[in-house]
Structures are given as C-alpha cells and as structure tokens.
Length: 112
Image (cartoon, rainbow, N blue to C red; front, side):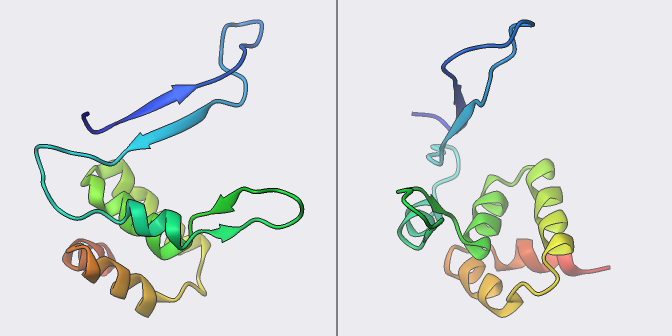
C-alpha cells in the first residue's frame, strides 16, 4: 500500500458532491520508513461520550501524525491547531513528537 487518503461516502448532493465523506488515511509510506504515531493515536484515542463507540484522536497524536506526512499543508494545520488550542500541553506534544522522531519538525514550527 502507498501513503494516501481514501475518501468514501454513501451518497451525493444534487451537484454530485459527497455528503459527509469519511477519509481513511493510510500511514504506510514505503519511501520513508520510520515508526509513525498512527497506532498509538488510535490506542490513546478518547471516547467522545454518550452511547457512541467513536473515539477522538488526542491533540498530541494528531499533531504528530500531521508532522509525519512532511507536507506543508499539514505543517500549517499544526500551527493552526496550536493557535486554536492555546492551553495545549506543549510538553506532552513534544514528548509524543520525540517518540516518533518528529521533535525537530515540531520545534521548527515554533521558531519565529
């Protein structure tokens, strides 16, 4: 398998656009072999509550997964996530990033 995103949906609107698409991310990248945070992100995900079985990936793992892609858009997303989460535990984010060899990438985004 190759790195990428698969989008699936049940139906489309009148213009042919997907209604509530779901993105399935493949974190396997044969061109860049390294441990990725995907498995731990799923294991550490937080239940969203209520009767739902859905769980939400915690912020440190979401940021690490985005940094693992090495894409500019994902780097931008990390900056935006930090801006929208001023109380984020930066120490924990750095620990998770360090675990997956992503600490330098995270720290580079924090530099002015």
